[in-house]
Length: 248
Image 1 (cartoon, helix red, strand yellow):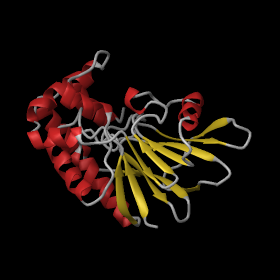
Image 2: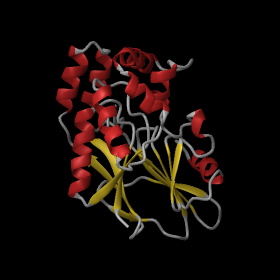
Image 3: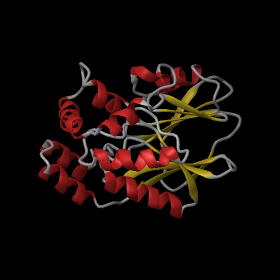
């Protein structure tokens, strides 16, 4: 059973995507899964979509995120101003093949006793944020999967539910192999490849080893200055460049 690299919230950041994929291969991952928000905020939506379309053709799961949905349906009411500006910049740059690819993406993907979803298993298309133990418990109640891997919140956390029914949170250390015991059920928010928000500029993703039942949270330095230059030169909001440079 091969190791699977779990990548989410790429947000049109091709430099971060390629750095994470190279890091994952170096650390033994031979399969990839992408948990949504492929576009939005960043300067390379077409390059990212073309890359992931190729991988999807090879069998990699690719899920729909809320920014992807907005890119084809239009920004929803309540979207942040920066999010809306990023989507409005992205929309005219997408070719029909990109829009068709986004519309083909599922909300969830099941791999044995593992569930992949962008936001929460409770209502995958409602784009709920999984920030606290109650959110994780609600997600766990909606599926019989032993482990659920999600993105959306741009932070790396691990929630677990023991035999007593209580759901607790664990703040992982990068590069540590965390055993996912059969005696618990798990929800992991795997972080953001393209726009980390914990004041660390390094891209974030995770590697799941289904044979050993371990999860490893990873941080990967990449050339964010190049991404920042493109954001500024292509007319995206300057605040998006500042966000990347500060990791927030």
